[in-house]
Amino acid sequence: DFLPLDLCNGLVKDIRRLRGGTNDQEGQSIDYFKVAGVGQQSIEDGNHVDNGHIFGVRRSETCSIDEESSKKLPQCDDRERLREILNDLRDDLDVSSTALDKDVTELMYAYYPNGGYYRRHKDAEKSSTSLSCIREYSFLLYLNVDWSTTQGGYLRIHRDGGGDELPPGVLPNYIDVEPRAGTLVVMESKRIPHEVLDTRFERLAVVGWYLASLTSSSSSTNVKSSSSPTYLTARENFIESDTLRALLRLRDSVPGMLAKLKPNASPPDYSGMIWDDFTFPNLNKQVCDIESKANVDEAPDTSNIDYWKKICSFDEKGRITTLSLGGQRLRNIESNILVRPEFSRSTIIDLAGTDIPVELLVQFLSSCNRLKQLHLGGNALGDTSVRSLMNGVPSLLKLRSLDMRYNDITSVGAIEIGKFLSSPECSLEYLYLEGNDLGCDGARALSNTGPLLDLFLGQNNIKSEGASALADGLKNGCLKKLYLEGNAIGPDGAISFRKALEDQGDSRNLEKLYADNNGIGKTEFGKLGAVLNSVTMIGEGGLL
Image (tube, rainbow, N blue to C red; front, side, top):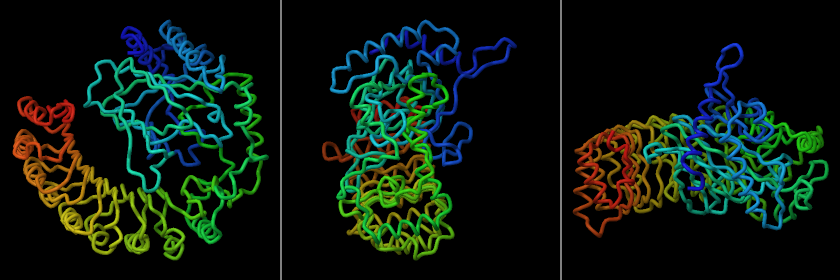
């Protein structure tokens, strides 16, 4: 309860007003909010925006409310009161070796609509030449009065030591923060990756960054231009020669990848700040000076790992460990470009949202014997392709995490996945199948969950019959978390789970069952919550 409720309510009213409740002199409604960007990348460089949605990365709106930007906005006493509180917080934080700037604080309102999100990211990168490199602390203040668990929009703070992705070979490790009104979150901008989970109701917040003093020695050494780069040591920055050649061939064969990698594009900082909103004369001049040097038309140093960090990461020997081609057009790529030993060493591969032919997909994955995480969401694979993958790629049995969300999979494909899970060689622990059409027969096919720890089956129309089959299968597996949001399981499905859990007693493995928006009804909602020792594991949306 860092902010009092009356201030939260006042700021909410201010947001409503700035989002279109204010009229200009001609009586026209004014909306001061803008679609939130991702860093400073332009739409042409990959931020494809439609209806406030930067595909695959972010969907939200922002309005800058720092002191200078507020001069352009209608007066609001609560906004002034907020800045005073945040200035006091900055003074409390200003005890580290890095002095914080007393004059400049990035500050904005963030509005997430129903269906909003912001995928995993950091707010600052040490190697960035933009303003983000002098961010020291990120802060978030939530304004969601009467928030409930059914509304989603949790802040997920990752504690796995990674950046924009989970590090290779590391299991997920995170905490989720409820975005309740008055809650304050402060984190180090360069160290903590985080994300906004999907919202099912509008989500309101104040977000901002405390900056290192531009006159301090630490900030002056952090802000560098590409004309005099500071490289990592050879051991850390080395790319093995065959790997570099394979990457260059891949880059030149995939439309759009060159633009994604080009170093002269304004460097992304994944902050969502819209820089045109800022009017700090002295600060803007220094940033512009930096960027003017960084944007000199020079040939990129493709042997530097920083050039490739948007699509891959490397081990200490300069070999690829993570390959991220999500969203790229791969339909016409030749197999000898992708199916190479330099790529087959990857432990994490992201091919989500691509149009890769299933024949090439099977051939490529068959060569990847070290694979632990595979992302194939949004590829419209269908049942035939799923059968080819489950039966034609033995190396998938070594996976620990498999994402096949939104792939037009029906009960036919679910049967193939069920056979895959029943194999004694299967090591899969996390399976994502949301947004398919498995139905009750598909749920029945997956009731033998094998080695799975987490199973995500939201929006699959499994109904009460499928819920009954899954409940019956709990006694045979080691499942700890089951996600069943939006499956119309109804009271009968809830009864099946309750009885199965009661029968297992203390020997049960299931720890969490998420069943929002299933029409369970008040009576069975309460009974199932009692068995699980927490109704919040079901979510109040289980009543709907």
